[in-house]
Image 1: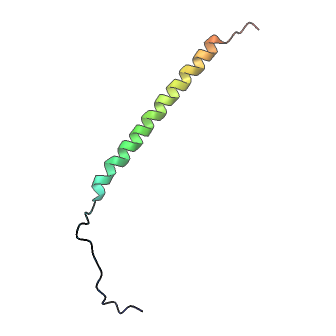
Image 2: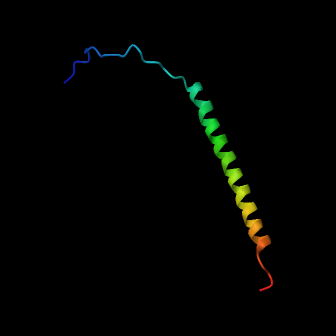
Image 3: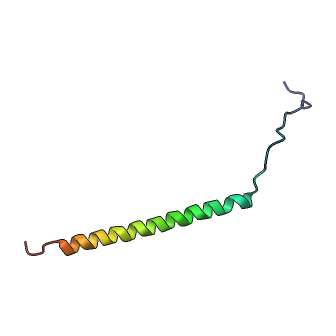
Length: 59
């Protein structure tokens, strides 16, 4: 069992990352995903409109 007075090894080259630095990365990822979904939806709509225009209604 530990006595609580043991010396802990620490790394001197540890660099702390502040929370403010991590926030913009998350926002950029969300923005890019949102843009990608919008583009995918527009492409899908265009594809469906083309299929509808090409469909022969006089069967």
